[in-house]
Image 1 (cartoon, rainbow, N blue to C red):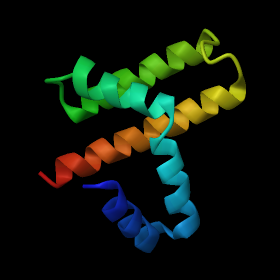
Image 2: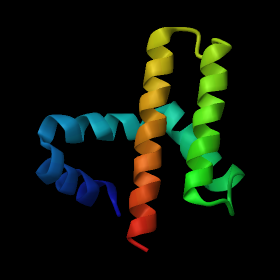
Image 3: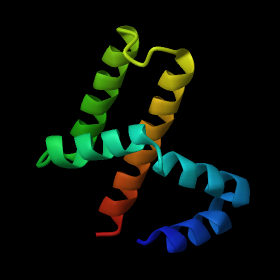
Length: 94
């Protein structure tokens, strides 16, 4: 789904404010990192397993203070959750 169509659909489903927030999240470096990790590095695994592994990696990174600041950790977690939601929706639409 292209960006304009996704934005229009999310505006209808979630409202304009939430749709804009989701668009900003998808432009983040952390979103690109998690998407690459989930689609390329964990290729061939089930979605449930990918979710479990990604959340463990995030928790490990957060515990080791890899993000530097709590705000960065929050943004990365937000990116991870949206990326997982996008993957679930892609799998449902197949």
